[in-house]
Length: 398
Image 1 (cartoon, rainbow, N blue to C red):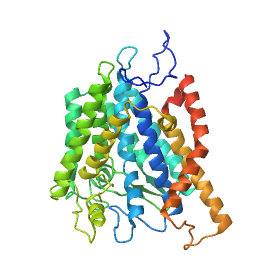
Image 2: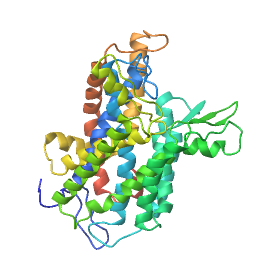
Image 3: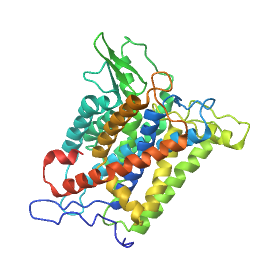
Image 4: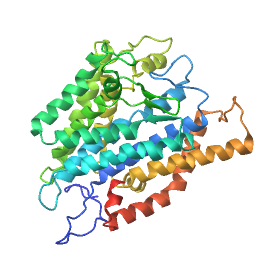
């Protein structure tokens, strides 16, 4: 990979007079591919290791060290997806070839598409059967609503977008004392924005919010604010240095806030019997909604990884890039493969924990994930190649 120019996808289609050249930044696709791998690990855990519920924050009394750090690694997924959605929106609005354009319409329609996809397709991949008794609105819903919010907020001055993102991410923990009882005025809106809960319930169907969206709107705004670092006028060395400083700054601030239990997490850490137990307590953050400390850890780590990946090109990064170029495709596909695989195993071997079948060790979660990703690599690569070549509008939503 060339270290004196922004790394781009060499397979991008050439510029024509009818279309803007599709130029992809390799490190962003690789980063997205990395969290897809971690996401798959976590979803294998939820299929085949669900007899031990990790909770939120994680219940350290029942979770082993290996299971804790397996779950902790998956905490990167949602923040990276949402953050890179904001960054991608800036890149869409500021193409390397061609004139600037408003991302508002694309953000709104894709956000709406993701909300519908969550309800119609993704929810069924977890439970099977249609219509479902309960609809869980999870990460795809949160990304969709965040995109819809950004589609409106992009009309603000750039500094206002950045300031609002910081205000939401750093300030939403101060809203913890605010809560509403079911049926009380404001309950539905607050359930969507900040507190998990049942949005709607009837004899026929229940709708539950698993991912309150307010903090994620802050994250997508910060991702959009970081976009200028990936402008063609920015030297890669300068971008790498700034990403390193930003990531390090996030982790330093986390060390101060968390180390002294000052602010940013409702669950204080406590000293354990061993150093590992103490570290686990310090890293045990709330995800639903994501606390400030959760976001400082995950976004800080992500910025450091983006800095490191900016000039990397090897067989591993190329595999990750393949996954990262078609994230929505592999997301939906792997969930249905896991659903069918679990049902096949359950029908063949039978349950061994109540009505469930489970594997016995955490290492098996990673082994199953490796097999799963090997199965999905070539279909994902084929779809990614089709996505780059086609001009069909619907494909860009994946």
